[in-house]
Length: 428
Image (cartoon, rainbow, N blue to C red; front, side):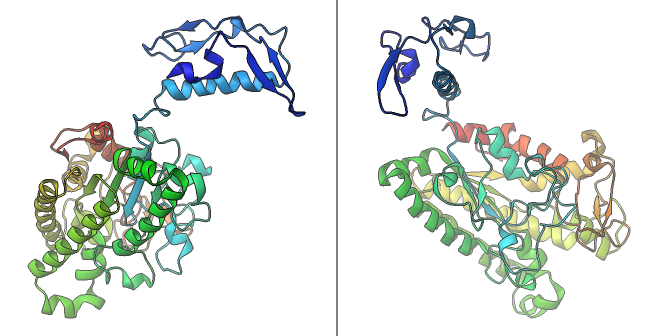
């Protein structure tokens, strides 16, 4: 692999092409001495280049560009990005837990592109990006840890074209759900069906960028499809007092969850038909324990809304059964179950163990004992110790909580992620 780099082929002098198109050979270095671990700390026989061994006397200033390029290329191959190993792209579907800015481009009542959202997001210098948290989402952190060099670009963003999409695309939308009626209180949002429609468009772009054969391999072998959705189907559909009374009268919880499972079965199957093979699907978290639910139901700090959590657990049991079904039915695919419910409940129950001071009060919000009624915005009260709060706002975890959750999904045992964790999934 390394001998494909021109600067490693020591027997052939470098051919430098100047702006006038004349080719002139230059021996700009002595044979490159390679170390195993001195610089990159790896065991490969090719690890780094000693700058002291480059003969600088005969180097033209513009020749340094080639030297730097060779070194960068070597690092690229050494670290696996230029091989078939490692994650190629991260495709993210879901709701506000993983929305990276799609709702910025919608006429919607659900937006997070206002301060102090994003105050700890280093990539934007602390400016809001449309993420519903103070820093990175779980999707951001997972992508970083799996080696994707850039965050998955929001599908609706103007820069979601060309080679930018090779690192992945984020289709998630605040207020979105499995069911198409979910989130209509926000006027506009992208439900999962629409998100998959958009991936179909992306899939066609990949064919143009890589060619059909390479695109198929890239999508199926080197990409992970993560789906984090379902909470809004309860919070902003079935349990929403104003819009769903009629539905709850005519449809039992069992029937509603049947509809959810049938929909997501078809949605996951459709992604499979579009070439997806490596899936991770998060179940619904303990939605009865979020600051919003505790506030409007006037609960104590250690209490949660029983009905909301029971609905989530009932859906989660059915979802786990569905993923087992699809693992046996759809050849060549692997559906990984992310047990978000137990992960978040562990943080809420034992928050002091993880360095938090509260798992009930929102860091950014207004209204009630837990600042859980009015979403985070410029006029909200803002805590000083953001890393000590499990919840950033009335609905969403803080970056500190997201880091703990993401690391369990990446490296954890089958208690929280099964049948494999995300680092193992990447390497399959």
